[in-house]
Length: 178
Image 1 (cartoon, rainbow, N blue to C red):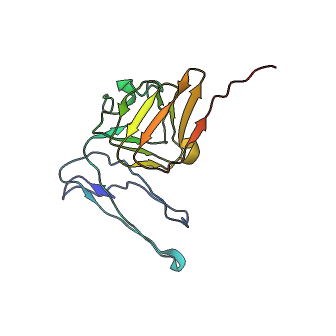
Image 2 (cartoon, rainbow, N blue to C red):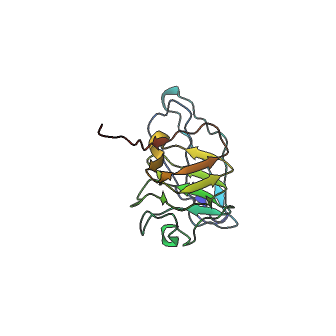
Image 3 (tube, rainbow, N blue to C red):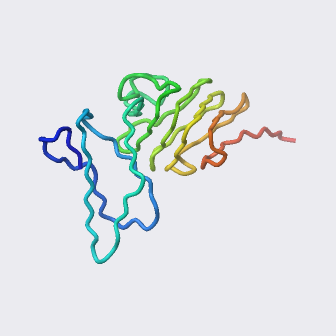
């Protein structure tokens, strides 16, 4: 739940009704941000099962939220909720719900501070495209959430801070008819 001031009503943010058997990261977009923002959590332990909330983080500055409303081009300002392309100090969030186009990176030297790809979302780095993420890179979309492509002219490039990231590499292999 959230409310924007002490005297406002509590509004539901998210409800989870199915059993979750393993640790799962959830990212929730907070609407109507204000300086008096308040969050609350409610749990209902049905049939003796436990409830655990761990490591709650509220990130409120320099967030770039993809909405893909124009096309799939990362460099189109209208694809971001604030109509501004992310820069190296931005935390980029790629949600999955209601997104008509997921981002495709075709240019070099693109950067963001952190990148979160939610389950069901994806990013493609085309041949010749480069994305540098010096901070946290969370890919909840698993291998399909991050695709790095190559073709006869070269490869896409991801420069992460982490040595282990789930991704799909589409490798170009030339051949002959001999």
